[in-house]
Length: 245
Length: 255
Ligand SMILES: Nc1ncnc2c1ncn2[C@@H]1O[C@H](COP(=O)(O)OP(=O)(O)OP(=O)(O)O)[C@@H](O)[C@H]1O
Ligand SMILES: [Mg+2]
Image (cartoon, rainbow over all chains, first blue to last red; front, side, top):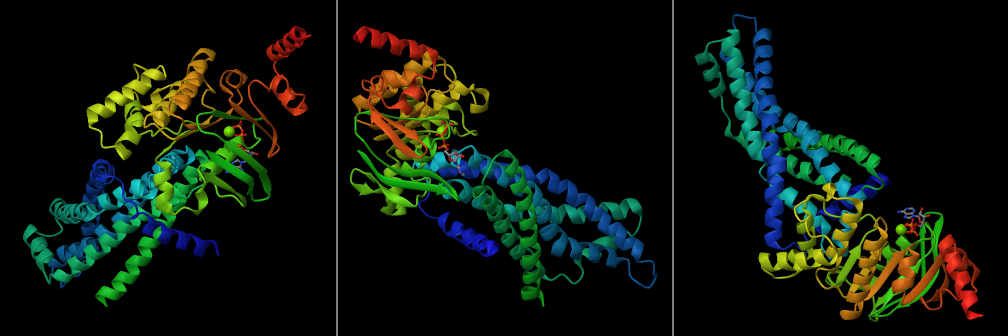
């Protein structure tokens, strides 16, 4: 029952956040600030993780191919496929559920417990629009972060390949270009947009509707991380089933 | 004018407000006093529509607040200033930006004009050199005063203050009390203040309501509160030795 109630509240929240929009001059600043916090602030960690995990994917693939009949291009091919299809969009988003998600939940949750949200409401401001809408707009730039992850993941793979001597640069690059299907990119970015929406709204929901004090803000961040990840995994499954099979 | 009729509010099993009726007039400072936990803050939040209630009605100039559409409610609230018990300053904005916030939201003033207006009210609450501090860098009493400045900066028609001078030294508290009283009379604001502070009661209590156990136990003004025989009120008012002595003196004088 409680779950149904929460899901209902979540969808009502999404409708409400588009109503009675905040003045554009104010909203513009909020959006820029959220782009800075959520997007620009995430690039560093995303780049770091993507680069090294890309390398690990390559090493693992290479080590598992010891049959001389299998062509070396396969290393590049497998790296590309796993990074573009799953690693960059999905697993990066789960990491972002921890970084961006808990930031959103704790910042909105703190505003809730210190009555800042009440203060907005009392002034006649649609606090959902004021707080959540700019985050949603900022997260529209999330695919940009994922593109960086894709690019650096493959570069990390290439580096690992060179330094480990698993295959020649030519083989790796041929592998990357093999059987390239443009629709895979479309699929990856459709997923990315859906994840961006989830990453902006589910943590906001947990922050906005929380009750209690500082201790509960911490708990809300954890719960928000769990549910954001669950939503990402389920959407990933459904999107893959619908778009690829 | 705000009219409250038979207001009931519970949290789960706990019945906090048990049927309160009251009228708050324009141009008066209406004080709500009562022990800690007697439901003053809950009452104020019901007035603001932040809490729903089970029974009763709240009318602003004859319009039932709860029946207004969401958009009407928000238009109405743009005319309300509120000081929260915990200040509720926006912690991502500087003190000056906090005070300018209602102006940015609801007026078409230019940035300089807003800044001038913010400076005027900051001066009135005795805060002249803290503009660029963040709320977290300000003391509790400073935060309170910023919250008051933010509440009055856009000339509200209704002003609600939840313990506006708790955390202030007696001197500043009087400055704040007088400021609230002045602007209430000057701009014909309907002002409702929660307080424990007997100084405020004596200074600015045009209309005083005493809450006890979720009910209105007494009602009057600063002129009548010291003469009442109502025991719960005298108990509350004369809980401090100073006031006990004052009362004895008054009684002696009257003999
Ligand atoms: N959100 C809430 N949920 C449950 N109970 C609450 C809530 N808010 C207040 N209460 C209860 O309502 C009662 C009245 O609280 P309220 O905050 O109105 O007191 P108060 O008169 O403002 O006290 P103080 O002078 O200390 O601020 C208290 O018993 C409190 O525990
Ligand atoms: Mg209170």
